[in-house]
Image 1 (cartoon, one colour):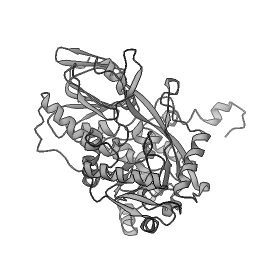
Image 2 (cartoon, rainbow, N blue to C red):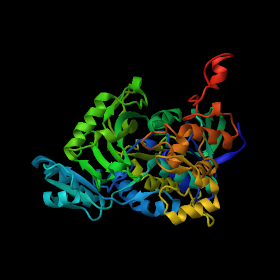
Image 3 (cartoon, rainbow, N blue to C red):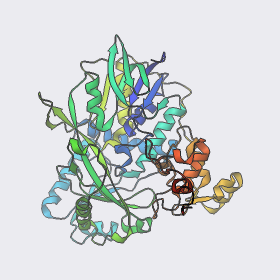
Image 4 (cartoon, rainbow, N blue to C red):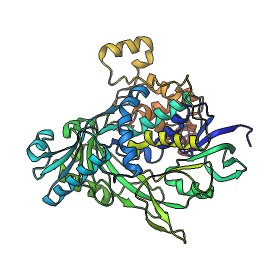
Length: 503
């Protein structure tokens, strides 16, 4: 067991845990952020829509409503300070029949009750002016100008890295096996030894119910809802101008079509409840892909399916109460953000499904308030570093800036990913940043190397070589996403043996 006593250990480095860790470093607290995977943003945070919702959808009076509206208002300034892309595009919830038009009024009134600004309902003529490629049977829409888009994994990296810059420690590949309390101190048993802390913050996403059970805290069940997406090439960026929703269903906000901050078109998600046998299954299925494209065609009839470059799935953590037999009873229908009633010093941010990405900065603010009431000194330190430099993207820079970058660092002149114009300089910076990438997926999320039309078909060997060189490890030790996901097995000449034909 380490002799270090942390003021707070945050379990889970998704968007919620990363925002909480950063908020904690505004104080003098000694903070540790732990993650079971090889990097931040490896769960729900890396595979979602990237929408910063306006806040009209949550039921008034819920934590969802409160944190959605507050979090959405924080994103423009945070994106500027932490150097991640945010675009205020606005969103449209579209009704395609008279019955659904009535629902627009309900959402409008909810939005007003929640404090969402600038909401209004637009008629068919104005709607088609805003979205020329929209289906002709679109009757009206709720327009929310304050909605926006971000890259969810870049935002998560930015928050977590800001926390590290401000003194938080980060431990990768650290799974929690047991939590017990010794007097006023928690002992968190992990695969990397025991961690001692005054406070524990459970932000473990789909595993939040299991972490809570380990601590003897509130019993609840996380039911995973899997959502599939498909991604179109950025040559299709003119397909839509706003985030386009259909009227919501009981399973969520329905299938959307949106432009991403990088210019691709994202379509999805499906809403597939999973059982234990499908735990965190992130594969895609032909039926779900067909279903989301069919539903999306109601919004945009002429989807250029030949430009689909990738499909993927993510899981949302939906909280249910737990019955006496430990079975799911009924949905909580809200976030769980609280200090446990029975285990003092144990805090949970659980069931953070949509609009969790939008709400995360506000959840972090509230969590700090709760910790202050529990005895943490929350006085703000004067030397907190507000801004984070990040990495300058060569591909989106103007010609003058590109020439200056190459002059300052010749590695900017070496294009590694041709599809996205990512340079060697950016990849090297991604490895050596304060919270650096350790695998191909980490490089991909930070720089977009491998996210273009060829989906890393050409650049992955070079990225593997750079990771090997910069991390001082053999190329055969480089992984796609940590663990045993090795990219290479060995040299073909050695594998084929003497006299073999492989080169």
